[in-house]
Amino acid sequence: MTIDKNELKKLIRDIPGFPKEGIVFRDITPLLSDAAGLAAAVRIMADPFRDRRIELVVGAESRGFIFGTAIAQELNCGFVPVRKPGKLPAATIEQEYELEYGTDKLEMHSDAIQAGQRVLIVDDLLATGGTMQACCAMVEKLAGEIVGISFLIELTFLKGREKLKEYEIHTAIVYDSE
Image (cartoon, rainbow, N blue to C red; front, top):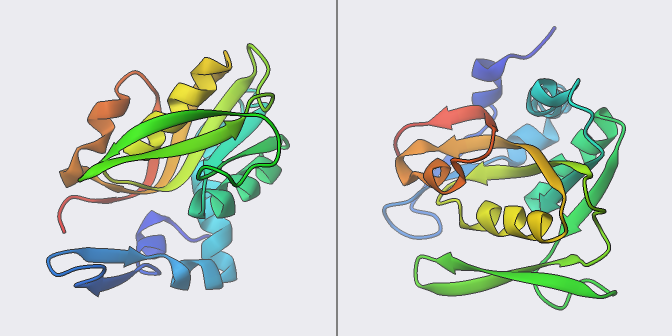
């Protein structure tokens, strides 16, 4: 049996009031623990990019690692981790990005991408777009070619897609409201 997007959405648990009142957290752990659901999520996220000659998948800490490595295996290519500062052992580049209150930084190894390599960037969630915008900036600093971006979930009401207008974006599951 093949799981479609609607059935996949049923594997995501809503947690009202987490991490604070007024937020509905989309908990993907039930999906991750379901073998068929996890396989379907990876397939659905990878499908639009199967014939696009992807050479590397880039994924941001931490849930981008889960989907990124699986999609890299699915597309028969390598994986590049993006981490919080101080977590990578070799020379890095960094990118600052905006949070609701303040800023944060992400890092990538400075030799992770060669000029012209075809890159798919993957994460579990598109909310405000700040994390993905930082990932894209680092790939471009290293002269990688961003073929597209794939998310498991998009929260359209937070308008993160607007920060990523220049890229092809694919999302498996969409929520139009909290």
